Image 1 (cartoon, rainbow, N blue to C red):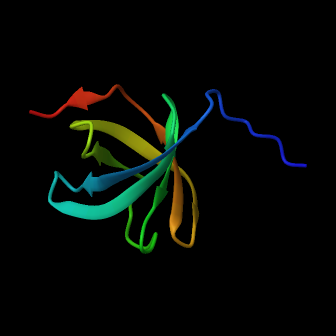
Image 2: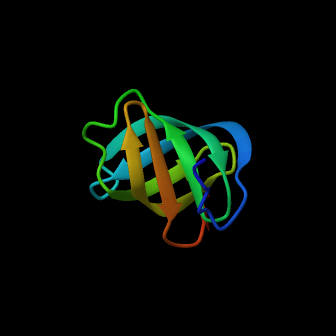
Length: 89
């Protein structure tokens, strides 16, 4: 059986998000399926073209966080947050 190496327990969610990079000029829509203080699981149409580091905008919370990709698989990306959340006005 595979052991989960996450620091924090992930909470199930179904939130809209956006992967933003290249000086805020490129955007991919995504769905946040679970999240914790340290990371999240994102659903995307395809992982092709998504960089290894980006900002994750969480639409319902009006926040963004810097993140890095830990793993990719078809239409899913596991990320780790690399900095604190910032409120977007």
